[in-house]
Image (cartoon, rainbow, N blue to C red):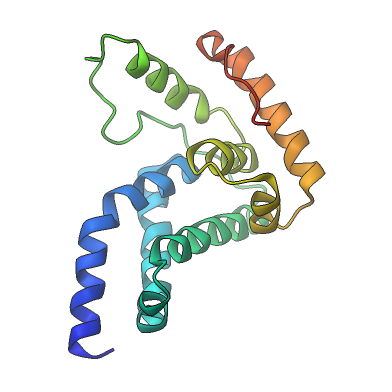
Length: 171
């Protein structure tokens, strides 16, 4: 990588690292695992930075790496024990008068109770707002499997956290 490309890469990482870390944390539910996942993704991005930067969509490329790497990990470690999930990054204060922060805190608590696959479906469909077909492609499953996983996960979330009972499934 030449000097200009390296500077652009460093600027991109400095600008987007927080948002990308939050995605990794939502997927893994654990700070150290999120850091490892993000490090792998940024390393892979660095290897292809000039081409990805020219394409104009480095965020999409990194997110795809994050999801595929996470899916690869849970496929390979199905017997691995889950870590208990704490609060989401930058969501520790309950200052919001509208109740939105309370809802976010409740959601962060119950996300730790989901399986890796269920957490991935929720992050992809709701946090990233991806269509079912794209989620299916990223997860290596069919659209029908994604639909059933979303339905089962939302049902489980509603049971675990009554505050979430009004969340509707995407159309």
